[in-house]
Image (cartoon, rainbow, N blue to C red; front, top):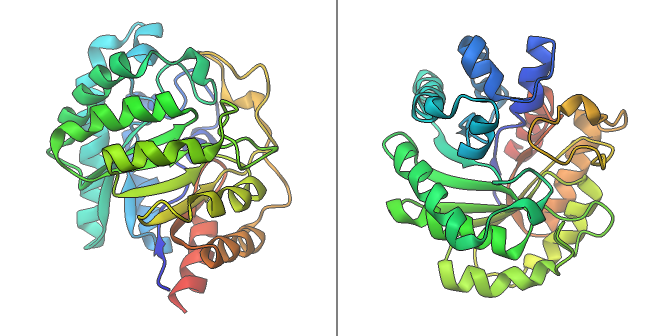
Length: 290
């Protein structure tokens, strides 16, 4: 079984390279140092990644409005997409995935607007990304309704839509909302995303989650985070990622062992999320290319 190697985390890599965390997280680099965003994309391609995921996870209307820069939404979306396309073109191959993150806040699906309202915002973002990207990816969707809103909205461009779901760190058979992961299966049948993935959960939970998607009838993938867990205080727009701690037992080789387990469970697209960097992706590329 061949495995497509995805890129690794963007936000934490940018925080590490910029030397500080802010409430804007990865978006801060677009405002201050877009050349660092390009360097991260370049490093992932050099490591063996076959995709570039745009640095637009946090370029969302509610997050920018909270920081009084809502009028920068279109400019920042265009900039992030252009940087990813330029990196891909310089590399000579690969796809560009247009990322959208959760409205409300990551890991807090109860803060998300209802799917019908979320779909309107996601549709506008998708239209803005569409000239640049090969596919759209909704990341860290943590409830059935949150996933529905993203699928409804991103589908407007006619480009492939990837859906990445975040599961409970304690029980990977459950979404972070507490709903069974299997409850998304009817949604997949209705909206027909091209790919379904598990993301931004601890690797152990990803291993639990993948068998739940075995009957989804489409390619599945995985990209875990390297956090020890999600702090209860990391729960609203403006919270900074220095509230979260990185694991010390998840170097490239340890992460790749998890990835091999995911591949044995049917994952054909594998990369990394927060705290998973170029060295991890290089190890994945080495193992899966062999």
